[in-house]
Image (cartoon, rainbow, N blue to C red; front, side, top):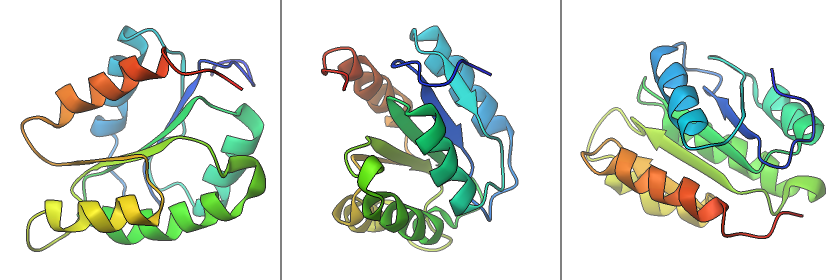
Length: 144
């Protein structure tokens, strides 16, 4: 694990209902290749544990990845908690992957952004490229 409070750290997690790990490993390797240390919390992380890890590590970014199709439900619940936590209200948070079990994932994207996500990456051919652009933009932002 990376040292606590490294201003460049990106926290990666699978939401509480998602037991998949390959996506988290892929994201960890991608983010590290792009120059950011990571803390990978793994799959099935309870909301409270994600909030506590954000408070401990003070990451530059929180990345949530869902493969099981419940990303929308888990994401709304978690971002509500994060945005209600004063010390995390401004933390950049993104979510991607399978966001729903029926219909187009893009149907959920606006709802997730409206709830407080800084970016949403539905399962699409452009998702990784768009995510990499977002990561690159972190270098341009002022770190608090």
